[in-house]
Amino acid sequence: LAQDYHLLAMVFRTASVVAGLASGAHWALIAAGSKGYENYRHQADVCHAYQLLRSKGFAEERIIVMAYDDVAHDKENPFPGKLFNVPDPNGTGVDVRAGCKIDYSGSAVNSSNFLAVLQGLPSQGGNGRVLKTSKDDEVFVNFVDHGAKGVIGFPDGDVLHREDLLKALHSMHDKGRYKHLLFYLEACNSGSMFVNMTSNISVYAVTAVDPDHPSLGTYCGDEATVNGTQLATCLGDLFSVYWMDQVAKSNKTLSLSTLYQTVSSSVASYASLHWGNEENQQYGDLSMVNMSIADFLYAADHVDAAAQPGLVPPKEVFSARRIDMQRLTHMYTDLSAKPTSPHRHMEWPRLQFYSKAMRALARREDLVQAAFRNLIAYAYPMDEEKRVAVWTANSDANNRDCEVGVHDAMRKSCTAFDINSGFALQFHQVVVNLCADTVLGWGSRPQSAIDAGSRACGGRDYPPNCDDEEDDVGGRSVTLV
Image 1 (spheres, one colour):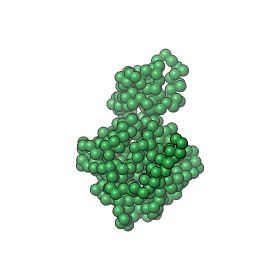
Image 2 (cartoon, rainbow, N blue to C red; image 1 turned 120 degrees about the vertical axis):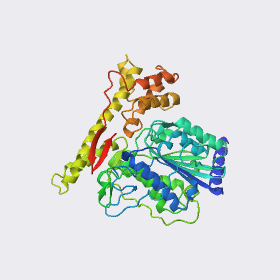
Image 3 (cartoon, helix red, strand yellow; image 1 turned 90 degrees about the horizontal axis):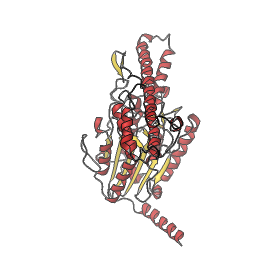
Image 4 (cartoon, rainbow, N blue to C red; image 1 turned 180 degrees about the horizontal axis):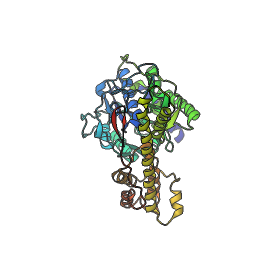
């Protein structure tokens, strides 16, 4: 009888989701959590998502965009002021930055503001716009960046922990800040942000990967070409370009279930051919899969005829953990393979630039690993077996104060590298493992962990900071940082 009652309740709930579609407004929060030309794809993904919503008639005053907004005008960008999410080797491409209205840029893109905007609370910096939602409104959230077990990153090194995100979503639900909320998350280990989310708060989350794998960038190397010019970066993320293409070419009756099944199948099949694994995941209120994309991504019957980038089948994909080095080695290899080019006098400075950039990046990646080795040594000074085992353990992120505390301490003391780079964040699992060790006790005594994090980038065994190197690329002085 209890099972029959549970089944009947699920049937009525699903029916209410389908039949009781929103009479309220539609809102969207779209955010890129990174900066730097090496992370071009994140800001391109976000501006593409903005253009997609606008093309479906979504009112611009109900879209809030957070992006550092440095990439379009970066000195490495051969198309100043423009962003492309899809390649167009022989054409002019679709500039997704044109008309993309950014509400929070620069240092205003941080975890505190993201939570404030999401919950409709006062923010700091930016234009002050927040989600002014009610219990009748449908909300779409799209976040794109680097991530690690239990955290997603922001441009200046802070992180948002799973515990804080779920607490905010529960608070919004309890205060009647939405009717349903759809969350699409593109980041490494993105599934770890929702594994503990309950199904009774009307939130349906789709992630690029499960809690234990990196996400994949695409349109890299030779593929990152527009109008015959290589952009020397990756233009998009595999999950993001696939879900946006599917929405762009479908009509409004497409269900969230069909969208998920189609995209996840395409992404997994393609990834298995080129890298090995990217399996999209879904969490939360799965009865919402019966809703249509129109319930979140369309805000009016009218559809703008704005140009949308069409999906160009990617030739290759790369783990976000190694994209930074991959883009530099590709450009160096490509340029060094043209010793008799008639344009050699122009290419020589660029060859030197990428050569120095590779060496500088390799140095910073050495420093990253040295810092985490030091952290482990502080935790287990006399236990070689534990020092080895902590590298491969796979604990869950259940100690927020310890994990965030260590990350923040290392962010402040480890100034020679970006603690939120795709490469560095893979070692956050070490922090999670240390905080989960009940014998070590850092989870219950986070200040001990924070003190160790503060010392991780110092001491006799830590290599000296790498100096900035300068080169001239095309007549421009560029500092490699």
